[in-house]
Length: 331
Image (cartoon, rainbow, N blue to C red):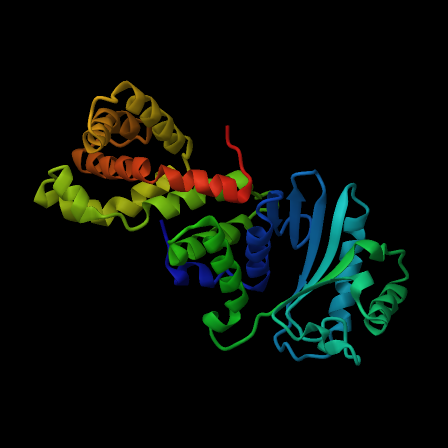
């Protein structure tokens, strides 16, 4: 489980940041998001409609030669508009003058602003109309939007300030706590998804990965070592290899669901046991089966599986909260 910022930064740029912001902001209503799909970013919603995003970054946000960027975006979005069930056609820019310079240009002086064509002042509507006429195309402006997402500064913290805003808002809404680990893992998800055009991130993918990172990052090792009487010589091994084992759970999430379901049944059938004893007995009766599913067969790895199972059953309420927050039913 790699949560090191340097691992993602080389392959994480403006378009990816925009994709992650859109994922977090729209997670309740989406079925999937595809960065580098049909367009720069495609969002498929639960109702079957798709929004297409053309992302045009400028190195200098104060640049005023943006009409060329607008024209290129419109040309691509025209092809998108010919598909069925289109919700929005969106031109995304980090420029303060995404449509060119006019008396209304200050309309885009904040870090996040979205306007439909009909909401634009007349002067900026004309800027769009001019580029449409230059392309000599028939473009449905009723579905056209302009989105400015800021991306500027000399370091990652400055450039990703709007991403941090989206992450903070989502984490607060979902009552999550592992901001740093979650942000870096979500960045990895987006970066990895760009490797192939058909690599979509579904709501299920987002849910699975988020549950794993939130519940299993930085467990209380010392408490576990004491409660389960772990041999001293095995403690360092557990700490060194813990994250590698978590990766197996990320890519085999049904195992996590099976642990939740089996513990519910175990709790009902063993109601005579105290709470802590019931959890411990469940862990000890389950770890070998889970280890076998993940093709692990040595004692040191068995102890890691015990730690993971004990953590999962202690934090199962987190998965329920996340389901409600993102409107997800994985039954």
